[in-house]
Length: 253
Length: 363
Ligand SMILES: Cc1ncc(C[n+]2csc(CCOP(=O)(O)OP(=O)(O)O)c2C)c(N)n1
Ligand SMILES: [Mg+2]
Image (cartoon, rainbow over all chains, first blue to last red; front, side, top):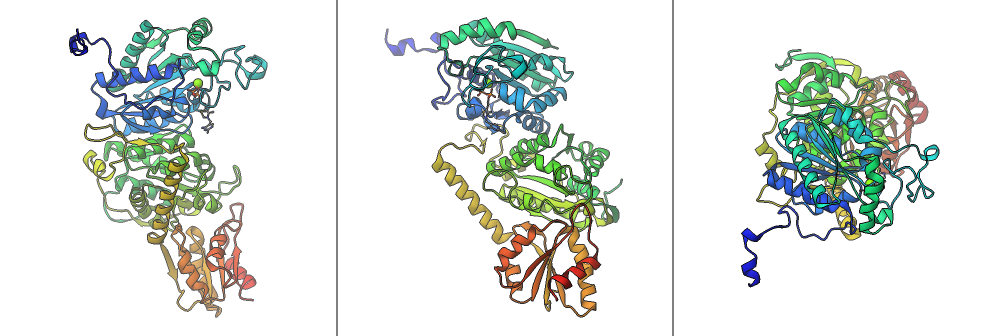
């Protein structure tokens, strides 16, 4: 059989999402960001929302998300993405508005904007990449860094008396009256990727249905920041992060 | 309040701003309470424009959030505004430099109070530097309008939006507690409908509102890591600022034709100066007033001209002396330049200004 005979629509099992362009990604091998970008691109396209979607990229490794997904974007100041999204959604209620933020962006410098946008029940979706570290700036301690975890600013491991405790921001979000859907997912296996995609789809649909605010946490790897190989990073995440940040829906109404 | 007609009304400057916003097609207001400007949000909340014009009004969780709501709203092509007073404006500076960097239009109203720090709730003009020097990080400028009456509070809303969108740049109305709180006669601007989606697409082809099949994605960012590209962006910004300096200077002159002494004052200080020049002239001292209406772009050229005519220039500001630096740069030593002002929320009287001019210049 020739190549042309094999490449037929009925044989297609995988293709690059149409909204993802060919720009080479700056993400490290093994990083979860790229997979989540792909899921977001697929869901927007499958919902037919390309011409009605505005994404807000954060300050963090995903600052350049706008280089990879061919939709309209605004790049927010560190932590402020939910404020941008609030205004855009209120001014353009028929748009799909989402933010895409890391743990430092969302759960540290932008805690106020995150909590208040969620608590007001803004009809937006926040995609939250929790890699327990500041990836972009070279691996410093994050609000979600685990107890004992070593980073460049807690080189002997996070300890309570010096650094306080990891922040369960997603659990807090689930207690807020403005949220309708709060879930914690991961993308370390094919099955997990499928679930994460379904979660993003549900969150986006809720946003368009005006049901309230949506938070989709993706427990993620940062192999460079953690100083592990991609395979080791997946294993470390499963062993150490999942017990602390268990996967599943925290709220779904 | 029924403000649908063109009658002469009596209201506070802060209230006038709110009514003017509803009337000039403003799409959204985002703000956080602080004295002496809370009447702006309160008036909007009482007027419920979301039921009439469709304007969004939202009390944000902080000034940091407000200014970033402007970044989002302005980036989507909408006419959005916030208002605050000095400490709140200080908190907004990061957002303002992002607006300038990404070239997003928005309107910021500062009803100034005294500082530094939490300072006082009494009036001041102490934020002149912050407004005209950018205030945040990087090389950028904000278009700054200084109203000196309740009428101008109303009129400058539409003017500021027009400038902000023409130049894709943040614009500021730099007022103070005197103008914000005082009641005065005002005729509100005529109603102008909010723009339709079609009109926004035409006016703002750069707006991030969803990529249609006929164009590339619109990406609003202030980030650029390639030095050459970042330099190019900065050069373009500077060229825009030079163009604004050439075309948008606004000022008012009173009795400058035969003036031997010039008072330069803006906002509420200019009202005091008006009275003072009459008092000085009654004493035989020919004083005149130049009132910058745009603080940036500053009326450098006109002040330089007048420097050749007068025997001295007094910068009268309700602060420790900030605009006086711009006057000195304009004058380049050709005539004596002095400053008079008070701090702490104390507004000088015309009589004090007369004495100051006599002591400092007309000796
Ligand atoms: C106001 C401000 N403070 C600090 C920084 C520096 N900074 C850039 S990214 C970052 C941390 C991002 O970490 P996170 O949000 O977890 O995203 P990640 O890179 O891990 O995906 C910091 C502190 C900044 N750009 N702006
Ligand atoms: Mg992180």
